[in-house]
Image 1 (cartoon, chains in turn brown, yellow):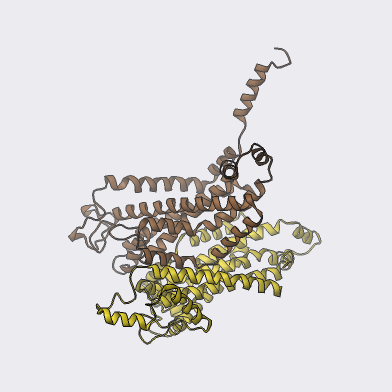
Image 2: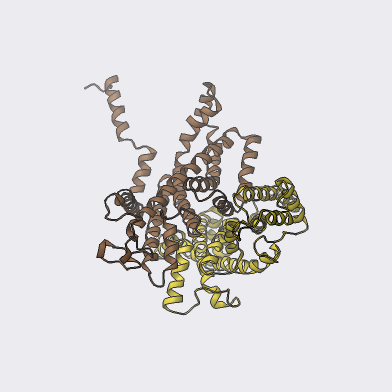
Length: 301
Length: 309
C-alpha cells in the first residue's frame, strides 16, 4: 500500500473517525449515565409512569367504585385493597394511580405551555434586541413582581375548576424564568457566523428564530424543563390541596394528600401513601434534572 | 443610589396599577356574586344591596372609585362579613401572617447559611452529601405534606405540641413552632444549596487564591474575603424567598388553622368578597415589590461591581 492515501481511503478514514468521534450530546449522555442517582431515578420514574398508564387498565377496581364494607379499612388483602380504603369506601391504590396520572399529565402539558411561551418570548427579545428587547424583558420583570399564585387562585375561582384551564394557567405562570434563560443564550448566539449566513441567505426573522436560534438553545432549555415539571406538579398539588384543583371523583396527588391529612388521626395510610408517591416522583424528577444539568453544563460541578 | 431607588419606585407605580386592574377585572368577570350564598333575595332587595355597595354602576366607574378609595387607604367594606371593614380583616390577619413569615425567613437564613457553608467547605465529603440530601428532601417535599406529617407526629402521636389553634389563644412558642418550622423547611433547603454553590465558586476565584498566598489563615480568608461575595446571591434571593413564603403561608394557615390573611384569601375568593381579595393581592404585591427593591439596594452596597447609573 502506498504511503499516500487515495481519495477512497481518505473517505473511509473520515467515516471511521466520524464513527469514533463523540458529539457533545454523546458526552453529556455518558456523563448522565455515570450519575447513579439520575439513572436510578429514571428507572423508578419509568416504572411509575408505566404503572400510572397501564395500572388502571388491569387493576381489579375502578377509581370511583364504592365498597360499602371497605370504608376507612386499612391496607389489607381483603377485596385486594392493598393500600386501604378511603372514607367513601373506594380503593386508595387505584385512586393513587389516577392521581399520579393527573399530576404527571399536568406536569407535562403545563411545562409544554411554559416552554412554548418562554422560548418564543425569550428568543424574540434576545434576537431582535434594542428597544423591543427592553420592552419585552421589562414586561417579564413586571410579571415577576406579581403574586402569581393569587392570580391562579382567582382564575380557578372565576372560571371554574376546569382541568384544561389548570394546565394553561400554571403553564402561563411558569414561563418567565424560561424566557430569561433563553434571552441570555440568544444574545450570545445572534452574533455567531451561522446566523449571519442565514441572514445573508435572506431568511426572515421568524425563520431564523425558529430554525436556527431555537434548536441551538436545546441544552439549557432541556435542563430547565426537567426542573419545571416538578415545580408545576407542586403548583397543581398546591391548588388541589386548597380544593381548587381537579374535582371529584377524579383526583390528583394533591387532592389525595389533602383528603388524607383530614383523616390522618384515624386512617394514617390515606396520608402516607399519596405523600410517599408524591415525594418519590418529585425526588426522581429533581435528580434527573440535576443530573442533566451537570451532564450538559459541566462547568457548574 | 437615591435616584436609583426613586427610579425603581416610579416603575413600581405602573406595575401596581397593572396588578390592581388585573385583579379587579378578573374578579368582576367571574360568574356569581357575593350575595349568592345567602337566602334568595327578592330582586328589589338585591337591587338595593347592590346599590348600597355601588355594584350597580358600570365596571369602569367602580374601578376608578376603588382607585380613589385606595389613595386614602380606604379599602371598602367586606361584602360577606357585615359590619367589618376590609382594613379590620387585614389588620387582624396580617400580624399573624407577617410574624410567621418573618420567623420562618430568619430561621431559614440562620440554618440554611451555615449548612451551605459546611457543605461547601467539605465539598464531596460526607458532610456535603448529607447536607445536600437533606436539602433535596426539603425541596421535594411540599409544605402541605410536611405540615400534616409534623402535626401528626409531634401533635397527635407524641402530644408535645398543639396541632392547630392560634384561633383559641395567643401566639406562643408552642403554637408557632410547627407552622414556622414547616414554612421554613423548603427555604432552608434552597438557601443552603444557593450558599453552597456560590461559596464553592468564590473559593476557587483569584482573589481568594491571593489571600491564601499572602499567608492568611483559612478562617480569616473565609470570614473576611469569601463570605461577603458568597452571600451575595442570597441577597438577591430574598425577593423570591418572600414570594415563596407568602405562597407557603396560604398552605400553612390552612393546615394549622391560623387566622392569617392567606386563609382569608381563599375563602374570600370563593365567596366573591371582592374588596378582601383585592386588598390581599395589593398588600402582597407591594410587599414583594418593596422587598425586591430593598434586596437590590443591599446588593449594590455589598457588591462593589454594581453601579447605579
